[in-house]
Each structure stands twice: as structure tokens, then as C-alpha cells.
Length: 390
Length: 232
Ligand SMILES: Nc1ncnc2c1ncn2[C@@H]1O[C@H](COP(=O)(O)OP(=O)(O)O)[C@@H](O)[C@H]1O
Ligand SMILES: [Mg+2]
Image (cartoon, rainbow over all chains, first blue to last red):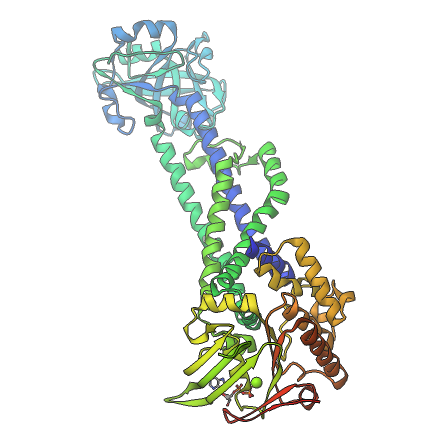
């Protein structure tokens, strides 16, 4: 195409200003790809971790169970239903019995959730085997956050309290047999894991469960009365919403960066159309139609974006690949945000992300280049040739 | 219309709006140019020479009257049709050369051929021929900033001639040149006029140019006051 060839000649001829614009644009584009890739990587990792530690392949909830309302926990458990019995014994699904309790580290009171799990379960990654430890006190397993919060270490002994079915308080000594490390705050903070049999005893609720976590290879077509099936996507809704919000939040920064880059290109376009009137007049005198001249200047502006993409392809790709392999270590304390986050996040730069972002930047640049170029078609060629339009 | 006339102007009036009124730059022009003429519109500054050339070059429209160029009525042409007329049949030479600064000499001369979608090899040959005519073939790779004024104007002539147009319009082509360069350029154009039968119309008040003209049209205050064929 003629205007591509001419635009390339003009742009390269314009020298420094072109390259400045290209570098600014490439920077914005790179930051966008880098950041969204990081979020995508985080999202994937969080999904993986949440599946492994908490969500499994879905869950069955007792019909009264509401994870946001601790006060209904007492009415939210029932006998393991017939329909789930075999899967439970086979270990394809695993029951969890939840009740409210409190722990007294250093004499302070701290409420928490007591979760009864099967020590031999393989459905989620919570290490339960240590719950089989023989000990005078009740063996419990807690996560790193809980341990830090209650200043507990492996081997420590502390007191817990809970209410039984009759509503009377009861207390016992527990021994921390294991502190596990996990990226998912919602299976760690404010929670204590105990042998499910023990919790059933404590609550006087033998063979009961609050919910089941479903492992792989589980198939169930009939509904289980009194229990609600929650699929993986439902259980991930909150997490996905949060990630979406983070993306939108980050976008504001890029809108501003893009605005700056577009301002630079707009300015360059306006200036170049003003300074190059004589050239425009000459193009018209030599028989270019006004439309051709407008498209020449538009292509010239939009070529900044093409060059920026090429620039990134050459210099950015190795950097992105490197970032993908070493990952990005997250600052300590970032897991207080409540979202599952690993110490190191490995960004994911998919083709969709890169092509989509590049296309977006290109289209915006094209529009910004076109707006000032439109003015050319209103110029009088006789004035343009002399370069005397104000 | 005469047998081989390529420009026919009759009753041409051009007014420019100024404030609430207007200024009459051309006030009833009747002129005919035949193929192969080497003619000049001569007159003091402000007499309307550029305005006349702009209308012949389809860069501007008459206010009244007619200007027929190569069979096309200028006042009735769409901007696109006018662009096509210029692209195919007209060449322009300006006082300020108007070369494209970021292009090399070769690329500048090549430009009109790109618009005509000529193939690469054809373009190369035509550009080199044209640069030979004006005697500047050794500067193909230079850029306008590296050339003298005389060299720039020679490149501009090569650019106007490269597509072998029927008509070349040259507005004060020597105004920025010293006498040696002016003569050289005029000789070049005179030769091209003879060899290629290209019609030239100048606008000038430079005696060095006037000496070369074969037809001298005197323009004063927007009116033709004399029109002489010079024979010698
Ligand atoms: N676009 C315009 N608007 C108003 N007046 C103009 C315009 N172009 C030319 N003129 C006036 O028309 C007259 C003739 O101009 P021009 O054709 O450029 O003269 P010349 O080329 O002989 O010096 C001048 O007085 C000039 O001021
Ligand atoms: Mg003039």
C-alpha cells in the first residue's frame, strides 16, 4: 500500500520524536501486558491452590450451612446421607464437621472455627495424618497464619472451648502437632483442624458432617435430599469477582498512561500537520487526493503503535519470558489481602492477552492520529503550498 | 476551441473575499495556450500571476468565466477529478522548490510515479532519465538539505518532468536563484520543451526568465495588457 510506504519514509525521516513516541507507547504497552499477565498468573495460581486446599471439585453443603454466618453452624450438620456413604468410605469425598470455638493463647480469647476432618483424607491438601498422633491432649493441626496470630508453635499446648449440642460450654487441652504452610488464607486464618471423630464427640453428633469436599473421579447424578451441591465455579465466584475488581482497578492506571501516550501522539500529529503544510500542499499539487493525504498522515501516526509492537516483540519478549520463568516474588504481608497468593507468582502471558492489548493500543492510536489529520481535507491547497495557514 | 490548444480561458474573474467585501485578483481574462508553447505571464508583484497559474493548475476555482485545461472545465471538477488531472497531466515548479525534506533526490523524483502505480523498474528508468535531463544524476542519494538552491530547483524540474506531463506550470522558478543557476535552469527547460513538446507556462517578473520566453503575456491589476509572440 502506497501510504504505508510513504508513512514509513516520513516517520523514519522524522527521527528522534518518532522514537520517543514509540518508546513511550511501547512502555505503556509493556506495562499493560506485564501487569495483566501477572494478574492472570496470580488468578491461575490462586485457582489451583484453592482447588487443592479448599474447594476440591465442588462440595456438598448441609442445607442450612452458610459460610458467612457462624451462628447457624449449630443447626447445619446432619448424619452422612446414605447416597454419599460409599463415596465417603472410599475416600472420593471427604466430610468436614464445623463448629465454633475459642482458643486461649496467652490468656487472650480468640474465636475460631473448629473443623473436623478425616486424618487420612486425600481430597484436599490439608495434612491430617498427624491428627492420628497418640497424645494426652487432643492433637490439632493449624496453618501458618493461625500459628502466628496465636503465637503457637508445633508442640505447644493450649486450651480450647466450644459449645456442645445442648449449648453448654466445654473445654479441653489441645496440642499443636503440625503447622502447615498454605497460600489460601481461608483454610488457615482463624481455623483449627481436629480429627472428625473428636469433633463429633465434642458436639455429641456422631457420624455427622457440615459439608463434603468432592475429589476427582466422583460422579453423582441424583440429588441428595437435605444437601446442596455447589460446583467448582460457584465456589470460586468470590475469588473471580475479586480478580476482576483488581483488573478493573489496575486499568485506571493504564487509562491514564494511555492518555499520556495518546496526548504525545496527538501533539506530534497536530504539530506535524501544522509544520508540514507546504509538504501537504505539494502532495496535493502532485495529484494526491485529500483522502490519500489524510490517510497518509493517519497511517503515519498509527505506525507509532506498529513500531511499539515491533519494539516489544524484539526487546520485551525476552524480558517477559524471563519474568515468566523466574516469577515475581510478592512482598511479605500481601497475603493479608485475603486472596490466595503465593510467595512467588508466575505471570502468564497468553497470546490473547498480548494480541488483544496490542490491538487495543493500535486502534486507539489510529483514532488519535486520524482526528488531527482530518483537518487536512479542509485546507486550501493554494494556501498550503505556501505554508501560510495559521 | 483551437486545434491544438491545451488551455482555453475566457471571461475569467477571480475574487477573494476580504472582510465584508472582496478583492478582484483577476478581472476578465481571455487567453489560449497551444501545445508546445513556452509562455510566460509577466507582471509586477500582486498583479495576479500566481492566482492565474493556480486556476490553470486546478488548485483553485474561477469565480466567474471559464478555464478549460486539457478538455476539462476547471470550475466543474470535483476535488478528486482535479487531483487526477494534476496527477496524470500537470507538473508544478515552485519558487521555494517544495521538495520533500526527508526523501532522497531519487525518492522525490520518484514520487509522482508512485502515484501513477508504475512498476519499480519503470520508475527507476524514468527517474534516472529525468535526472539526466537536468544534469544531477550524481546526487540521487542526497537529501534536499545537502543540495544548493540551484540543485534543488533542478530536482524539482526533474520531478515535474518525470511523468512527461502535457503542461508544466512554473511560478517564479528563479526567484531564489543566482543568475548562473537561473540560466542553467531555463536552458534545461527550453531543451525539454523542444525535445518533449511539453508546454510551459511561467509566472515571473525576472528579466533572466523573460529573455527565454517565446510568448510574453503582460498582466497588470488582473488584466492582460499585452500578449506578444517573440520570434528571433
Ligand atoms: N487567498 C487570497 N485571499 C485574498 N487575497 C488574495 C489571495 N490570494 C491572492 N490574493 C491577492 O490577489 C492579488 C494577486 O495575488 P497573486 O496572484 O499572488 O499575485 P502575483 O503572483 O502576481 O504576485 C494580490 O493582491 C493578493 O494579495
Ligand atoms: Mg506570485
